[in-house]
Length: 60
Image 1 (cartoon, rainbow, N blue to C red):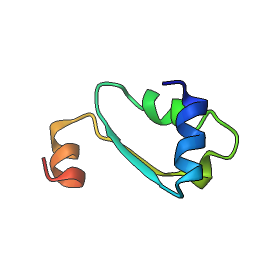
Image 2 (image 1 turned 180 degrees about the horizontal axis):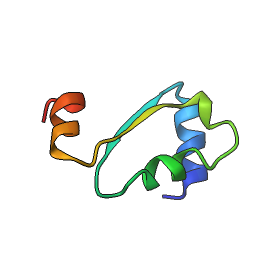
Image 3 (image 1 turned 60 degrees about the horizontal axis):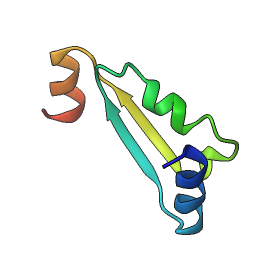
């Protein structure tokens, strides 16, 4: 699925999206916010690389 298609789907359905990333280093968040108007559906992204950050922020 292309990011523009996902963007339109989320917007049309009034849905929001949050992501938690580790080894992707923020690339997923960057992709999701590369579309104009992404603040309509993109709520937040967590980039937790270290094990301690994952435990502190994500309880994993």
